[in-house]
Image (cartoon, rainbow, N blue to C red; front, side, top):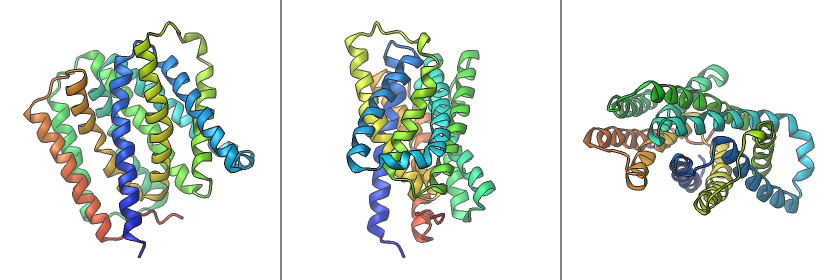
Length: 293
C-alpha cells in the first residue's frame, strides 16, 4: 500500500492549488483589462519563470520529444482560459465558478469512457452530494440572459479543463515543470493570435492583480495542479475541485461583496461534506493515487 504520508502531502498540495484558483475569478473581475491582456500577461510571466527553472534542471532537451503533446494541452488550456475569463467578465465570479464546477462530473465521465475507471458506490454518493450542493447554490441565483450565457461559457471552460488530466495521466513520464512550461508556452502562442485585441493602459492596481495571478495563481497553482492530476485518481481530483465553488463564493462575499445567504451556505456545506466523505472513501479503498502509471 502506498505511503499514507504521500496521500496527505498530495491532498494538501491539491487544496493549496484550489484555494489559489479560487482567487482567480475575483481578481479577473476586479482588474480593468480584458481577457486577452490578462491571459497574455499571466502566461508570459509564468512561461519565463518555468523556462528558467527547467533550463537549469536540464529538462529542456525533452521538450523536443514531447512538444506535440504539450501543444495539445496548451491548446485546451488556452480554450479553458478564454471561456472562463469571458464568463467571469460578463456574469460574476460565482456564476463562472458554477459553470466550471461541472469539471468534476465531466472528468469522471471521461474517466469511465477512456480509462474504464473503477467507481465505488461511496464515490457516486459523494459526487451526488457535491452536485446537489452546487444545484442548491445555482437555484438561489436569478439568472438573466447574460448570466445564463456566462454560465454556459463556464461549463464549456470546464469541458476543456477536464481534457487536460487525461493527457497528463497518460504521459505521466514527462517531468512536472516541463509540463507546466509546455502548457504555458503553447497557450501563450495561441493567445498571441489575439494580441491586437489587448490593451495596455493599465492602472497600478491592475498590475498588482496581474502579478498575483501570474505568480501565485498561474505558475504555482497550475504547476501544483498538474502534479495533482497526474498522481491522484480522476475521482479524487474531481471531488477536490468541487471545493473551488464554495471557496470562491466566500471570497466573493468578503472581497467584492457578492450577496450570500443561508441557502448558499447550506449548498457550500454539502460540497465540503461530499469532499470529506469522498476522500475518506478513496483513502479506505486505497484509490486516492492514480493506477494509470
